[in-house]
Amino acid sequence: MSDLFARYRKLLARRDQLLGQGANPFGLRFDRLLSPTRALVEGREVLLLGTNNYLGLTFDPACVEAALAATRAYGTGTTGSRIANGTYDLHERLERALADFYDRARCLVFTTGYQANLATLAGLAGPGDRIFIDSHSHASIYDGCLLSGARIIRFRHNDAEDLERRLARHRGEEGIQLVVVEGLYSMLGDVAPLRELVAVVRRHGAWMVVDEAHSLGVYGARGRGVAEEQGVEAEVDVVVGTFSKSLGAVGGFAVSHHEGLELLRYAARPYMFTASPSPATMASVTAAIQRIRDDPSLRERIWRNARALHAGLAELGLRLGADPGPVVAVVLPDEATAVAVWNHLLAHGLYVNLALPPGTPDRRSLLRLSVSAAHSEEEIERAIAAFRELVRRFDLKSAA
Amino acid sequence: MMTKDEISARIIDLVERHNPKGLTILLETDLTEELEIDSVAAMDLVMEIEEEFDLNIPVNEVADLRTVGDLVELVARELRGREP
Image (tube, rainbow over all chains, first blue to last red):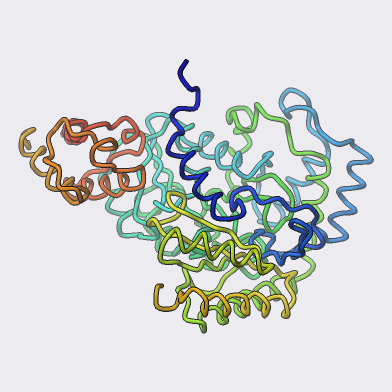
């Protein structure tokens, strides 16, 4: 009899080889969360620097209480989709809160951030259209494009000139042209040059979607993201984002000044054919948005920590992926070193993300650290000290 | 209009950059099995081909590529599609 999973032979060998070197970087179990920045792993306390919990709101009392109250009042789940099984006032309240926060006419919420991109891209474009995506785009952007049936054209990462060349090749053709970029790229932590990109988009009569998943709550005077930071919000047609990072829950959204966004409720399958976000999620996210509006010190703290961590690691001579920001990527010479270093850090009480090809840009092996407003200065110091020890032991300085 | 032979020659030149084992590259050469070009390298190769021929190759078309000949057919098709 043939093996149903025969196609995964190479994957299996690679996984077994990886697991042979220590803990499982792609399936580590946290037995208990002690705070947004600390957890128990196999009975030992670990400092968390790989959570995407940028503002540390997962344990925020206002958010936790809102989730508890909503669960008591509305139950544990919505048990269905909004088109088939109804909308709760909590959905509409959250959509209004997000629309107000972004100062946009329309907002749709989705059950996951992944589905936010699927629904938005498949809802906006279709066969006969073209979607231009940055070559470092997240998998949800690729998958949303595939679901749309549009022709997908990649342009070189953060390269407005390459985008322009590619748009020019289709001048005069039928169909809409959608350009999709991320505000902050989550692997290397680098920011999109949105000013240059929106100029190209406008010159070619295309439409612009910006995914602010990793930048919401961190960039911009009000925390709306990189488009706000770079002063180009009016040029962006749709902003997509997630609840699962700075907002501390699970889910996603799209906001737009186009009234037509509403039509996606009747056309975008990842919105229509899935259960809507849970009462707890909607309530905690509504509270989290209020926290971002009320408390600019959240942003001040994450930036203080981000700058301190970046400076500390740069001083050790490590090769970093980008300028200071909520994501700090340490570029390592090869996969074997990356896995060994990841295990060493975990054994010394530090959890970071291991990112390996093909999931990384340009085949790089990375340790990816995400900073939180909830980290204390002492915790950031501790993380830098762990890397100091690492540099001595693994000679990463010369290798990188 | 470029001939199939011209397209083939230029594509084989580009594929040579992804041929560390020095295999003889034919139209039948399998990109994954013989040249061991994985999904990431395939995207790099496609960008090189796009620049060489000044055209956009949609990602949708890349998944079905098996051989060097498939690349040639794809480029020929895209070039034809661009004609007025």
